[in-house]
Length: 125
Image 1 (cartoon, rainbow, N blue to C red):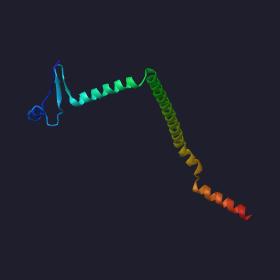
Image 2 (cartoon, rainbow, N blue to C red; image 1 turned 90 degrees about the vertical axis):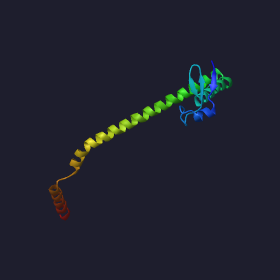
Image 3 (cartoon, rainbow, N blue to C red; image 1 turned 90 degrees about the horizontal axis):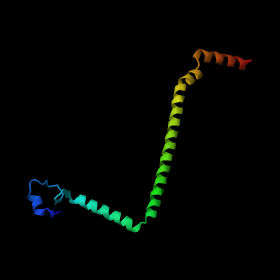
Image 4 (cartoon, one colour; image 1 turned 120 degrees about the horizontal axis):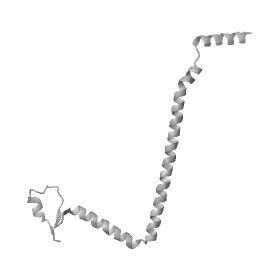
C-alpha cells in the first residue's frame, strides 16, 4: 500500500480542491482526511491506554456501576413520569367536576334575597 501526502503548494493551486478542504492522505484503497486519521489514532491510543492501565475486572466493575446507575435513573424517570400522569389525571377530573361545583355553590339571586330576609327576620325576633 502506498501512502502519499498532498503537497501544500498543490492544495492552493489545484482548482479541484476547495480552499476549505482539509489536507488528505491518498492510499491505494481510499482517501482519508487528516482529521479523520487523527481521530482514529487518538481513539486507538485511548483504547490502548485503557487496556494498559485498567484490568478487565476494573472495567467490568465500572461497566456494572454505570449499568446500575442507568437502571436507577430509568427507575426515577419512570416514577416521576407516573407521578406526573397521576397529577394530570387528578387535574382533569377536577376540571370535569368544576362546573358542577360552581353550579352547586352558586345560588339564584332570588334565593339569596329570600335567605337574607329570613335571617333578618330571625335576628329581629
